[in-house]
Image (tube, rainbow, N blue to C red; front, side, top):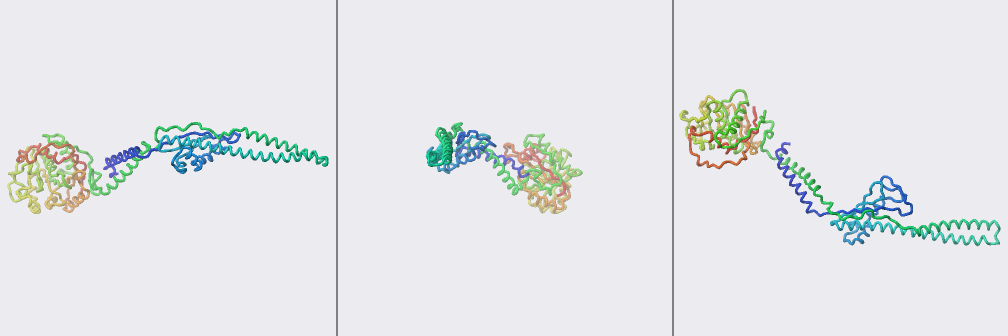
Amino acid sequence: MDAIRRRWLLIVVITLLFAAAGAAATYFLPKTYASTTSVLVAPVTSNTNASVANGRTNGEINLDTEAQIVRSVTLADQVAADIGTDLTAREIAAAVSVTVPANSQVLNITFEADSAEAAQRGAEGYASAYLAQRRAGSEEAIAEAKAGIEAQLETLQEEFAEQTTRSRDEDLSDVDRAIASSQRETLVDQIAALNANLSALTRSAVNPGHVLSAADLPRDATSPSFVVNTAIGMVVGILAALSLAVILGQFDHRIRSPRDVHPRRRLRTHDELLSSTGGSDDHDPGLEEEVDQLRIAIDSSAAGDPDRVLVTPVGSNSGSDWIALSLGRAYARRLGSAVYAVIDPTSDVPRELGIDGPGITDLINGADATAIEVDATGLMAIGPGSSPQQLGRLLQRPRSVTRILGLTDTVLVAATPSVHDSAGAQAMLRTMDRVVVIGRAGGVDDRDLARTLESIERSQFTGTIVVALVAPDRRPRRARHRDAVPAESPAQATEADTEMRFDDTAVGPILARTTGGI
């Protein structure tokens, strides 16, 4: 579900694309038109009382049989000849369908074609051909019946003549003449009955049925359907998008929210969201409140107020050094004083703030800490010093770390490189009571976070770990020229300078804070 939730926009876009493709296919696929005609099937003989049961007649008319006749290739041959088409009989038979309304003697004949006119001609052709075939069959049956009756009459008339002669023969006994006379009377009755049947057949009019409703000229194509194709495209799009989201989720290790952090590596999650204004105006209340909330989250992560906070990045472009500076100012506002120490020799904070007093390496080598100025908020900002490349080696000495820790009796906020890659950061870890791991949401790999936390564990750190995700600020940043920033002492740097840098690093919402041991 996380993979689907994280890629909901991709799912929506793919679904809409597939739906649009299905809708567009409606205009490119071959169109099919259908025309329907209704034919009332009349009894072939004079028995017009054919009963109906379950939608089919069980008397002289079997509509199931009639429907099969309509769909037969034999009738299709006749239709092809009547409507003049290049289609074969089998192709025509495949284009026709027959339905029977319940409790009726009606056949609904539907013909499909690639044009409205062809569909109409096909339906009319089928109705005409079917009725013509049925009429021909009826007439043929009547002719056969008449021929049979005439043959019987001829035979009976011959017998009648013979019996008449016998009844007049004086050589016969009275008994034989009486028998002959009786047989002649019987033959008369039979001949009269046959003549009556023959007369009825001669007078009977053949009525195979008639068209109840003529085939209409269809206005719209029955297929492809815009609604059906769009719905099919949407369903296929949803399935494809969900499958793609799940597959991508198997290979995407980026962390975007608290739920993306592996459960093994978090003990508690703070779910409140902090929205950054990302602005650079002086004394931005929203920005100060955001930083204060981060400070409160760090303070509440364990019992007791922190004395030493180490801020380290995970992933790239996290802006952890600038976030550490903001935290230092937040602690200075709350406690009256604080120290911000840049342990990262690659940080651009000292250059852009104009920190030109003694740095960390200078203090370790015996420089006077009283020469370090304090800014208006009570923050003492210290850069790497004149020998930043020696930081890692110097911090391996216990007295070097002690020297740094002795700079304040309130809170020390130290900005370090990644603890996974920096020996100096690992040396500082042993003396810290809070570690804040900063990563940019969407830019942090879950495996990188795992390695960072494992490095913290190996350094024998016993304090509290806080993992904070920083959401990128999507608001357009104000134009600025970093090279034009004058070098100022920490005392001259205003809080607006710091807030300007927050816009650069997009401190954004702190999406996750994980506390406790690894």
